[in-house]
Length: 470
Image (cartoon, rainbow, N blue to C red; front, side, top):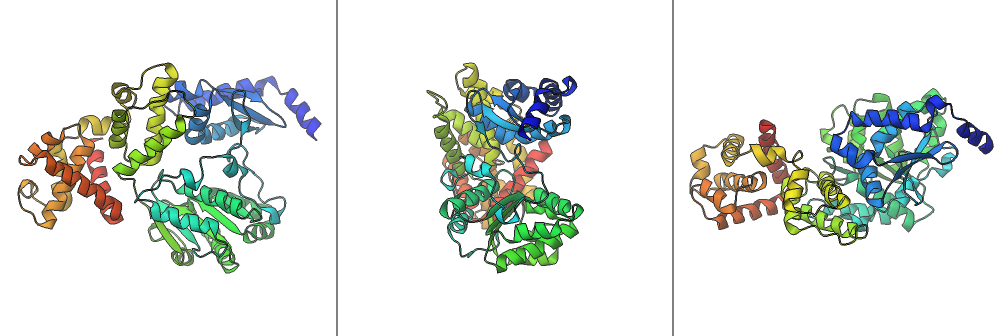
């Protein structure tokens, strides 16, 4: 069979050879991403035959490999699958290095594992050093989820079952799930572990029905010691799959297997969810990952710079550049690291010095809304409307809680969303001293890290301000 496969590869129809397919894929990619990203990341790639229908997508260095794997590889693989009639698999590889496993390029497309009793966690989890507990940057917004996840990975007693981790996109849910799977296997190598996205679970379930293999599918999944499913909110509205998952969840929990799930919102907030499934999810442990506050965002950047120093000789990112990224990119750690990657690729890879001016230029598209269009007056107007106050109340010297807190939030957002200095912000709040602004900023940061409801309130106001200006 191997010889037949190799012969088929060696005699590929010229109309569908590797170069032809890759050119077609590149045209599709170019239409979906920015010209800068295409030139920086995609144009430098090469595709070569490997063996048995697998192809190598070759990057010039480890940094490029990691960035593409994190940001573009899903898209590349989806487009390759659509353009390649032979449906060959892609492996991501550094030039002159060993192939890097990946959950996308090497995904098993069969409906059921060949041996249901041997369902295992993706090998990519163990090959990818990014997904461990010790490189997950911990702060007040995620420390509970991190601690519970560590305990779930170490224990075979299933104390937190099911464990449900929720939060916005890019906050680290997938990292924690993969870290649980990795650590669980290290701690107990014999454990039968399966990591899937909810979309993959749906696909496998539907395929098992079509192939009359539903019994094998159930046996495969329900015999596990640990099941981890990412983005469980994808099941919303899928009645038959939810019903199957309810029975699977009940069986696993009753048998003492650990179930870990993630979603972008809590079970109570997922619409079109089976009431029994919602009840099961609420009967376990629910942990929320909140948006990262300023201090944690800075810590994440410093941690990433330390990692990158192994890849780049004499790497040095000035503090003012890190401060700029920290203040301007507040949506998620993923976007934060993406901004850092953009700056490194736009400077060090082309021989430019890493300066604040260069960072502002490179990130101009990313931060254009908050950098140019929002003024202190607009923040004040949005704040009084959000809290139902009068502008005179916001600027007054009154110290009642219902006025002081919105005033502090407005000062904090003025510091976050504008380029105004602290004295200038103080002046716009009825001539207050810059030390008052500093106190307000620190108070809001502390409260956001301690109180997730308060953090949501501030982020909601921030989003309303930026949306009005976009």
